Each structure stands twice: as structure tokens, then as C-alpha cells.
Image (tube, rainbow, N blue to C red; front, side, top):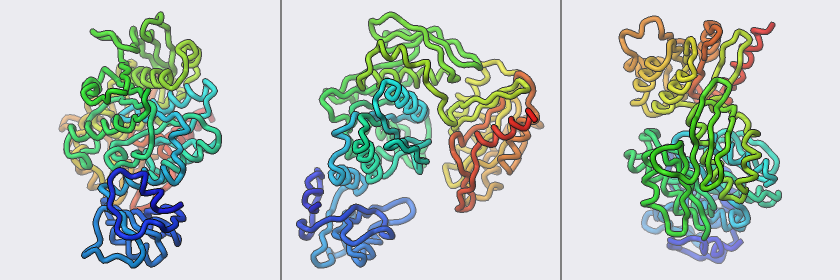
Amino acid sequence: MKLRQLIRALEAYHVLGPTGGEVTGLSYDSRDLEPGNLFFAWKGSRFDGHSFADRAYEKGASGVVGEILPEGLRLHPGVPFVHVPSTRSALSVMAGAWYHHPSRSLKVAGVTGTNGKTTTCYFLHSFLEMSGFRTGLLGTVEYRVAGLQLVATRTTPEGLELQHFLARMRDSGSTHAVVELSSHSLAQGRADGIRFDVGIFTNLSPEHLDFHASMEEYFLDKCLLLRLLKRPSSYFVVNWDDPYGRRIPKFLPPHVRLIRCGIQGKEALDLEASQVKLSLSGTEFWVRWRKYPRQKVRLPHLGEHNVRNFLCALAAAWALGISWKELTTLWEGLPQVPGRMERFSSRRGFTVVVDYAHTEEGLRYLLQTLRALGPRKLSLVVGCGGNRDRTKRPRMAQVAVEGSDRVYFTADNPRDEPLEKIFADMQQGVPPHAGKKVHWIADRKEAIGLAIADAREGDIVCVAGKGHERTQEIAGQFLPFDDREVVRWLLSRESR
């Protein structure tokens, strides 16, 4: 494909050099670049890709796309430089052109918010698949592409991979795609080359404030999804119970139709749940869609938050073409979501719940939800990740102690930080009166084992923070570790 064909997809750019050259591929890693590839450079948190432009030229790049003009405009003869406001956005847009705009051949839903994204994606993907639509999924837990299940490397891939996966979905006969969108990906423009039919906003609470300057900036970055709803008949589904969700209409483009979901309150909603009953075996409630008669729903999923996730997915499924009548026959087939309040039963009569909650608000809500189920004792295994926001560690520890009867503080993903340093930060949030209810166990497997060994009939043991993750990152190494597999193994030993 000619460079000029790719450039036409951009809205803002300035080219230095010829544009008639042939491009053999796209690359943003100079180590993998092959002759004829177009190289994309941007400044990351650890490295500045512009510093690798010379290496790309030496390896035969057909051009460079970047945000910083070469010093003194010293260019390699005959090799163009495409100057853009955002390289990652340009990569997504140009990759879309490279793969012949796959999102134009698919119906695409994008899900964003602080909590509930993964569960909502799974619910929506399940609705579409059960209805007979061949559907791809790109999210935190896994990528489901062309009949394959791939371990996810990040919540939202880079724009080049996003477009590549969407193209594989299209080429394999998929008609729909569900994409989980992190605030980082929206702020960086990784999804800018995708046309979404439906957007979903789940909720907003403090997270990633080491990346976003404030909660307001965090919210506005989430709202960037609205500008990607470019279809004339687009929908935006909002959890109306969330205060930030109720601000969405101020930012809604004229062509986008709003669907408001929530648990019955003072105002009428498009889709609402009522008479919610929670138990350890699942959740029951009534649901009403616009003027249709209300229906009773029974879900195996725990917690009121999953009612909201369910409503958002249900509304999006309708917006993507499934009739309400058909949806009422599908919802009892929704599976558990890996590492999202995933429930395991013990022969000794207690329950283990594995969840991904790794923020102060997420952990507080998780513990409140489990406490409402009436356990004899609620035990918690939790840690804090290394090389991340240190200010949340004392708050996480305080929430853990206040919300549970016994706490086993342990390693999460220490990364390059000493665990002792992470523990020291967490200890600042532990009240002096906590006493013997708090245990500090460095080895995560040992901590889970102690919590389960101490459990009795009627107890709940909650293992929080890692959820679906299959590795533990320690000193630059990704070591095999899966909370769910550890729990299964420990519970299986009870029956021997």
C-alpha cells in the first residue's frame, strides 16, 4: 500500500518528504521492524520512541510517524517524516486503513468505566453468542478472535493490534465485536480508528490518578468514547445510578441515543431493576424494559453491582439487534466471569470468592457486598501492587481491616519493589486496635492456604486483587500464579 493512501485516513498531519513510497507493514518497535515498514514513534513512560528513529532508518523504514520533528529538520534523504499531534491515535487510524477498515464490517460495542467493564463485556458477548451472532471479544481476561481464546496482554491493545484483531474477526465471519476500553487507551487514542455502534459507561471511582491529573480529567477521558460513536444510529448505555453517569447527557453528540439503566429509584428509566434479593447462591430481581411487562430474573452472580452490569449488557444487546422477547429467554444462560466474584464451594460448608478488586472503592464495595450475605466470619486475602500509586496502599489496608473479620495481607504483584516497602506503606493504614485480626504473610499461596484452613461452615473467604490473572510479577519475572487454581487445589485436598 502506498504511504499516501494511509495518510489520507488522517485528519491532522504534516508530511516532510515524498509520499509515493510503498509501505510493507506498520511497526512501533524498532527491534521488530522489517524493511519497508512504516515506523511509529511516541514518548512513553519509560522510553522515547523518537530516539529509535535512526535505528528504524538504518533497518530500511519506509517512513517515520512521530510527534516531535527531527532536530533541525535533518531527515534521511528520500525517507518521509509524518508529523502528527498524537502518534498512537495516528497508528490506530492508519492501521484501520491498512486492514481496510474492519470496524465498518462489524457491529462494535465499547465498554468503559472504573469497575464492571470485564463482567459487562462477558455478559454482552454471551448474549450475542447465544443469539447466534459470531462475536469477538477483546478485554482484560482474554481475547476471543476467530475461534481462538488468547491470553490478554493488556485491557486494550495498541491500535495496531486492535485493528489486526478486528480484521481477523471480520475475515473469519464474525459480525459483532465487544471491546473493553481502559481510560489510558481512550486518552492515548488507541481506539481512534474504530467506529463504534454502541458505547457503555459502567461507573467511575478513584483509580489511575497517577496517570490522570484529577477525577475530572479521568471522567473526561472516559467520555472520549462518545466521539468514537460515528454511526448515524449509535447508542450510549449509561449506569444512571452513578453520579458521573448522570453527567453524560451534557457531552452526548446529537446523533447518539441515550439508554439509562439502573435500580429502581425516584425517576423512570429505560431499563430498571427492582426488588433485588441477594444471597450466596445468586441474585434475584425484577426487570422492566420501557413499556414491556416486567420479568423476573435469577442470576448465579453475586452482588447488586452485577445487577447493574447485567442491565448495561442487556440494553447494549438490544441496541445491537437482539429483540427484547429473545433476550428474556437468554439471561439464565449467563456464565460466571473469570475472577469477578467467582464463587467456589467447600465441602466443609464455607464459600471462597475470588475477585479482581484492587482499588480502595472496589475493595470496599466487595466487602460490603459479601458482608450483606450474612457470613459467620468474613476473611480477606489481599495485597497491593508494586511500582503503582503508593498513596492508595494505606487506604486499601484500612478498608481491608474495617470491612473484614480477619485479614491476611500478602504479595500481589510486587514488580520491582521490595515487599517490605509495600507492607510498610500498607501498615500506615492499619488501625492500632486491629491486633490479632491482621496477619502479614509474604507468600500469597501460603496466605490463601491459611485463610482456607481457618474457615468454618458459614464463613466466606475472599481472595482479592488478582482475579483472573495467571501470573505474579516479581523482579521483572512473570511467574505462574492463579488465585483460582490455588483455591481449587486447596479445596480439592479437603475431599481426600
